Image 1 (cartoon, helix red, strand yellow):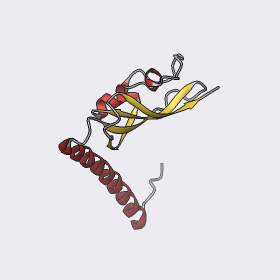
Image 2: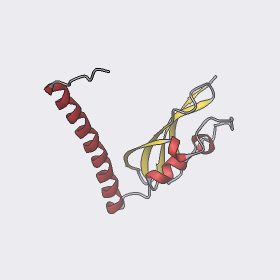
Image 3: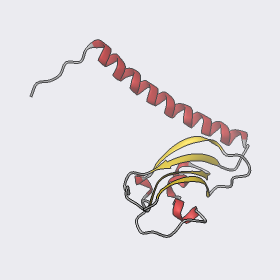
Image 4: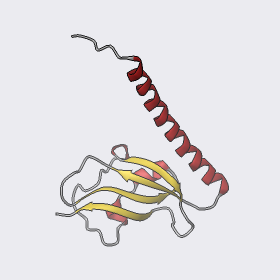
Length: 123
């Protein structure tokens, strides 16, 4: 097997991409900490995504209000959606299969455990 030699620009691009991702993660955590310190709200907004269930009658993503990333990943949009049905296998039961991205501090009108919006794939 031949090893591909990376050129200096390719190595630099890889390094910059990794640094950008680390910076984005750090800024998200900083914003979350600042929101908690300022106490402007009881909750934070998270974009939840999953790629386990991709067919009809499934949610692929949603925005929720939660106290923490860990709490957000346990929320199921079908259980929070007042118009949602109880379809089988529409959202992962295990939090480790849900990706959470911090969006910011929630306004006071949203309480933790609130579904803000969701992307549902109807049949």
